[in-house]
Amino acid sequence: MKRELKPAEREAIVQALMAGDRVKATSIYLSATEGNLTDAQKFVKTLAGEIREQRSSGEGSSSR
Image 1 (tube, rainbow, N blue to C red):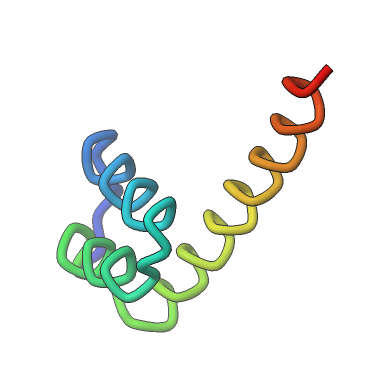
Image 2: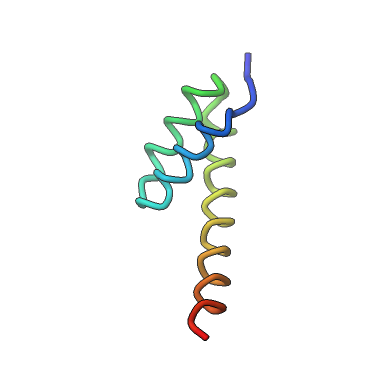
């Protein structure tokens, strides 16, 4: 049965994505939630997009 991520688990996924390791991020999600691969891939893809967006908006504002 699928369960929600704990904050520490979400942070581990974020750290894996920041390091460029989508496979590790997906694996952490699967282990933590006991969900399926499709859900894990969707979650990781969405989170990676959010991180990318934050990085671009953050770089623009911090460079001035």
